[in-house]
Image 1: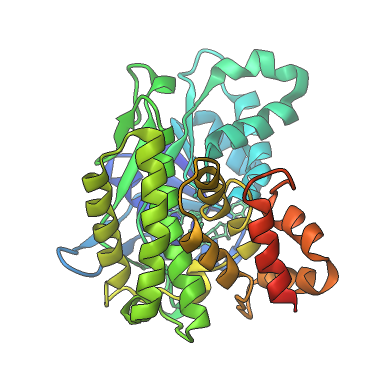
Image 2 (image 1 turned 30 degrees about the vertical axis):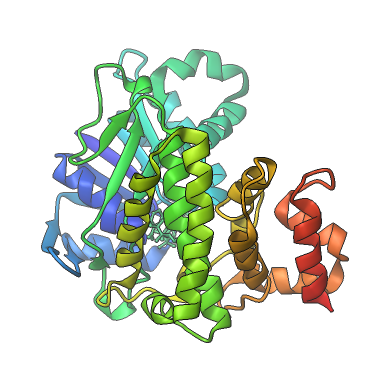
Length: 380
Ligand SMILES: NC(=O)c1ccc[n+]([C@@H]2O[C@H](COP(=O)([O-])OP(=O)(O)OC[C@H]3O[C@@H](n4cnc5c(N)ncnc54)[C@H](O)[C@@H]3O)[C@@H](O)[C@H]2O)c1
Ligand SMILES: O=P(O)(O)OC[C@@H](O)[C@@H](O)[C@H](O)[C@H](O)CO
């Protein structure tokens, strides 16, 4: 069995590639970072170090690596004969993966089993987005090609911090993981991924994950930054930051209970487990990584404005979420391009234009004026 995985970064090596390997797939990592591709090729195997309670070391072997920028033909040939394609590149990069999938599908024999495609990004409907890009590129050819692939949305959860260069291609991760996958597209022929669970409706799972793990994480990063913390575990040790994270998560839990019918006690336990994961003292995770790309994180369907807009429409409390949105407006991280862009926009646009452009809220949205007030206060 062959799996092509796009994006050999933190989660690509530390989670998706690991589980595909353990499921019996030969994994072809495809990435555009030449030093990473070369290092993977030279290494031939790597170790996933699970740190924290119950963690073990896992060895990943039986993989190859291809530079998709230098050798797109080789990538297409692998996709043409693969069983599975996964991605972990970031939602904005999916459009650059689509040409490789299309090229592979064009070469794939019509009688072959459909390619199973799963985008493993922190975003709602990421695989649908990827399929949309492939379909758009294919144009009239899509009718003939569409039967050659099935596309399933997924929700992946494992904290994989940035890796120190000195560690080579080994990866340090937390022991916890969860991978929920839409079952419907596969019928009886599901990919073999140990520990993954297949669900009929992914919506509640991805929203629970994105609006709890990632909302809580963003709260820890943005409130932590304002409190002068640089590590996520340190941010959680600050009582004021912790109270702010809890406030935001109580609001998203209330929304998830109202919207999807999760039990309130189940959500309370889920929140506590997540806070424990964030506190893992052996996980070297940073405010810089978790707060990265604030423009994405402040956008309409993302972890802050998404749940806050829905909660406001339902008359639920949003003060905790708005405190995180406010803190995000102050976030700075030297290496992060979106951070610089946000700070520039704050000086160039008035509060109405900035609120619309960054959060996607419209003036008629109930949340709009509250966010605009925060923006205006930041600009004074
Ligand atoms: N790190 C985590 O804890 C975690 C957990 C769950 C989900 N995710 C999601 O996984 C995705 C990747 O996150 P990450 O932390 O691994 O980031 P990362 O930056 O470590 O990895 C991304 C990789 O994609 C590669 N890449 C960029 N453009 C590419 C292209 N055109 N073709 C192929 N590869 C390309 C980069 O070179 C890099 O190696 C994001 O959507 C993130 O939200 C991350
Ligand atoms: O990857 P991002 O930038 O969407 O979010 C940063 C972190 O919250 C995220 O990577 C988590 O570590 C991960 O989603 C845990 O499953």
